[in-house]
Amino acid sequence: MTDGPGAYRERACPVPGAVLWTRTARPGESGSVLPDGCMDLIWSEGRLFVAGPDTRAHRAGPEETRRYAGVRFAPGTAPGYLGVPAHELRDRRVDLADLWTASEARRITERIDAAADPGAALAAEAVRIAGAAGPPDPLLGHVVAALEAGSSVAGTAAATGLGPRGLHRRSLAAFGYGPRTLGRVLRLQRALALVRAGVPLAETAARAGYTDQSHLTRDVRELTGRTPGRLG
Image: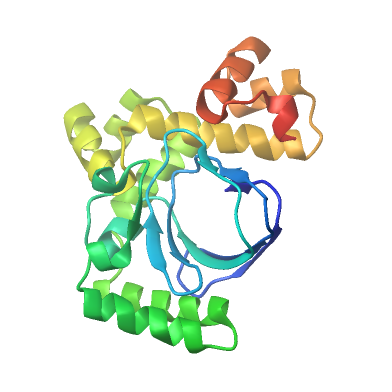
């Protein structure tokens, strides 16, 4: 999730669970991308790269005028589509040419560069990539659903039949980090949605699954570098 200046828009993406977004950065602008448990395939005027799962806010420095389009894949799905374990890309931005063959990455980038609507062209490429890889493991969706609902790691391991070690191993490959960190990130996103909807912080803490408002503030600061009030 992007938090910062620039013309940012989201629209539907044909890949199940994914979101297509576009952004135009203006000269001198800077912003940050907050942890959300997702991985993105991002085009930016001649460059195609993958944003791995973040454990902290990713800070972008001052930019020149530049257009971006990205497909944000649902948590746990991108590694299967891209053929790379998520933990290898944790807190990283990596050119697609470093993950696939340079010629294949270049062909995709050139098609998007030449399109009248780069966002739509990127979405079409994402559909092709996802279709070639086949459907994601449904078990990963159950893991996300359990943690989003506030289930403990032990409860999630039991509910999915993976056991604690199996859950941790599968989580590293699919999400980039263990289930405890994924649970924190998903809880952060629940809290941010409530704060941005105008819910008071004390109520947000209770509804999002924090022990109290102090816990909310401390956790949000650790993950984003800012207090909840500054992210509203």
